[in-house]
Length: 457
Ligand SMILES: Cc1cc2nc3c(=O)[nH]c(=O)nc-3n(C[C@H](O)[C@H](O)[C@H](O)COP(=O)(O)O)c2cc1C
Image 1 (cartoon, helix red, strand yellow):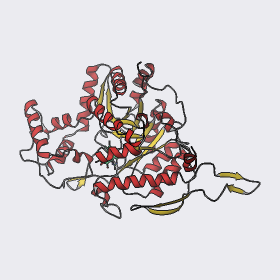
Image 2 (spheres, protein in one colour):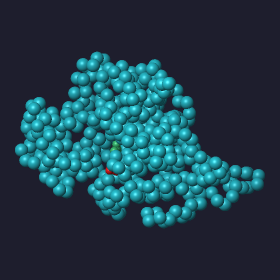
Image 3 (cartoon, protein in one colour):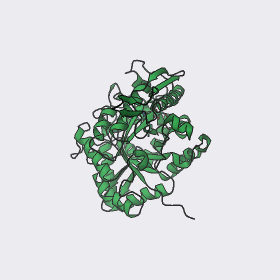
Image 4 (cartoon, protein in one colour):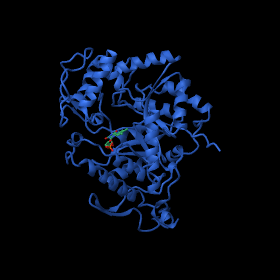
């Protein structure tokens, strides 16, 4: 018997700060005005997307001691943006990335429980561990934690936050005006958590929220990150979006769930992907090439290459050949705050491979960075893009995609108008929201109603 058609999940990433953003395009607007957030969120909602996603950067990135140009305006505070968006959307999930390294559970739980109330059950928390000590320097405790300890704290953090969310059962508020009794008893919000990371007790100040707790996302990619996700997350934001890499990541992570007493449907895999559309395949390819060259200016090409070479390459011509010097090994000193630095674990081998490729294809520094920096991108006619997305989902390379448009605020418009209807026509994507919470949109099972309900069930 063939299995039922999988439903595609779609989300919109607000592309505030990353190297897909083309801020120099004539149609590009503000990265920080509320109107930009509203436009993208309302377009995503019009297209019946599951959620809007905000990444987090807690310090402006630097390169060669200067602000990295692609950090267009930094990142405004996640909770303020999402809370404001809750007021101008009705169904769309609101997902915020919040580090477990530089925050405290009681604050984060309070903010997410509040967001879940304000949005009537649409909040999600992407728990990240913020890998770099450079980011940590702008907090009171500096770099703060080693790599191994960051996931240990993340686990303890999520466990503690969950205890806080569960400290209210959900039916304590009786608000009996005649009897003058607001709560049904003395237990509401009581918590006590004592471990190596968090030694806290008291009463949690926000009553149980519509979803019980926010939907939990995870975005780390290491062995520790994957295990953390398999044990505790509802969805993973991954960078593995091509067919082969996606299928291998998908089967690896889904295969880990049984050991944690979970089923394959308990965790969704949602990679990031960009897209460029055209009326014909040729036009789409041509537009995609233009976008790539907008994204990777000559200056950006040098900066991206410096992240592997770990030395100042500003004297090189981006339209000329690759540097004749080798990458500097050892501690990374040039680029600060960029995750992609960590992807090049063997810089000499990468340099060798890139030199061979550039020589074989006659590529300049900029041409090469355009080629190698290309992330998963859906390029084609709306029909081709709908086919590709649907087949990747049906063939278990993903459960859906978090789309990263390259333009703010209008970068999702064409996708909403031209691709979504095709996915709907083939029965792979909703035409109306069926439920009211983000858990409903994601097809995740409902949670128990707090500790008492779970213990009783
Ligand atoms: C797709 C993806 C997106 C991420 N987004 C963020 C982010 O917005 N903010 C952040 O501080 N860390 C982000 N991270 C970093 C992770 O939370 C984590 O700290 C890092 O990947 C190191 O963990 P790992 O070795 O398990 O990958 C992201 C990681 C991935 C893979």
